Image 1 (cartoon, rainbow, N blue to C red):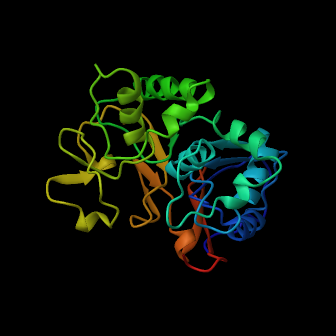
Image 2: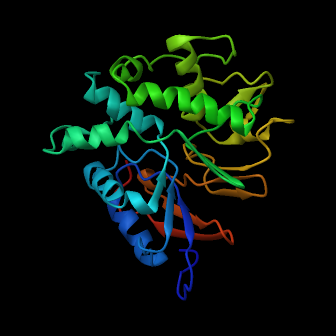
Length: 278
């Protein structure tokens, strides 16, 4: 474990990596942070659910503490919405307890109204990443387009259409293709080609990235660099705290660690995963 929040005298903002239903690890981390929902803020990078054993408990905790939480949607959260809309399960899904819960409708409606992007200068909270041509203002506008669809009556059509390869971004896209393309970056991107197109299948460490690609946050001249992105999604990248980005998915659901960073001074906190590796 790194760090221990012993003597807090003022509000702290903690960003936390992908939970994926790992409630036991989350509880340990909150204890070590001495997190106080009456004072502190918790920034969650998405993927609250799936593959870990206690997705339902995670959702209920985050919803109950919504006043102290800033949370964005990840690809596993969208998959839960797709399952709720009738999509078939995937091999390693652990979502049945959520889908069978007596409060499932309230939880699903709450989840689909969460944002895809949260900006608070100088930080930008997102699950996966951004297209290099997007300014922060553009990214926020595009995220808002998809958020409106998720919160509206056609949300089932959107979430059940998300399987398949990423859609390369072009500003002239419209309708479902446009929304799928936006989500290809916000919840799926790890590496990109020089033109910003997402490499569709890679999830390994950066050193093994396919030829011609780079991590999305390493593409030169990206227009979002007015802010520091805080993100997860890439367990093989792991904890990566750099001047221009903060990556927090340290593979808790794979038996590694759950990571947090206090944004105000960049102090890192970790707990070893309490759950069995998936």
